[in-house]
Amino acid sequence: MNTDSAQTIYIDYLKFEKKASPHTVDAYLTDLGQFLAFIKLDFEIENLEECSHQIIRSWLVQLMGDGISPRSVNRKITCLQSFFKYHIRLGNIIQNPIQKVQRPKQGKKLPVFIDEQNINNFLDIKNEENDFATQRNQMILLLLYHCGIRRAELVNLKTADVDLLRGQIKVLGKRNKERIIPILPELQDAIKEYIIAKTEMGFNNIELLCSDKGVILSVGMVYTKVKNFLSQFTTLQKKSPHVLRHTFATHMLNHGADLNAIKELLGHANLAATQVYTHNSFERLKAQHKQAHPKG
Image 1 (cartoon, helix red, strand yellow):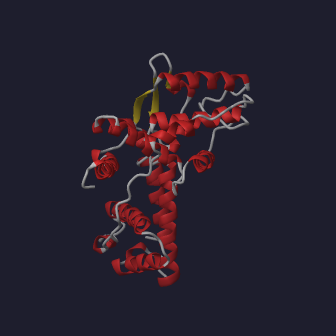
Image 2 (cartoon, one colour):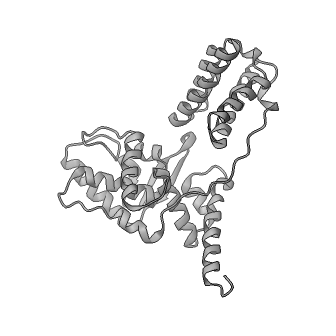
């Protein structure tokens, strides 16, 4: 099978059958495009059947030589695994060349989060001029921290998904899986004020959050807004919306929340993805132990 056709069929499968998120589709499209361009340029391969594990290894060696992190390389391997597995299922290839490829080892990276003593300063945005954009930006920060939702989940949140009477919001997560997240009175009050301000601006779009012109926010805009605010309050190297998701989970765990409850709130498919936050708590416990112990 022609590699271009194989790519098109696979991406359509991700979009329409697997119903992967736009973020996942874009990432796989990029990774797969890079690999297919490599084998075409360096090995003049245009048929999927000609691809071998030696060729895949050559690509991975080139990536590592270019300074691509083991984490990113492993993500690309995951993409190729899914790609070849799909075409084996269709009968387009007989053997899976990725099976003999080993993943590079990568060190464990603990989730980055904001300390509790700094979070209130970060969330307390002054809106002295009663500006809609400032109020909307605060809404972004409050939702990310109070609910621990993903950036894509945030921009797709509808006003109808917010139930102020019950004190909860409905979130559409990965693979179109819905979950309900409780919201505290502080966030409820902020949402009420924001919706009033949004109505006064004449914005009637169904999405809860919108730009200064009343259109749906892009994930890129959310990233930029959060990064700008984080830069003012923290020296963390990573400054993304996901930091607030990590902060939500870490603070919940530190205050005694059950790990399974955090798993459900985050929308994780399995507990292993949530357990990484226990490492953060343990590292903090070790630091306190060392500081307080007479022999520390």
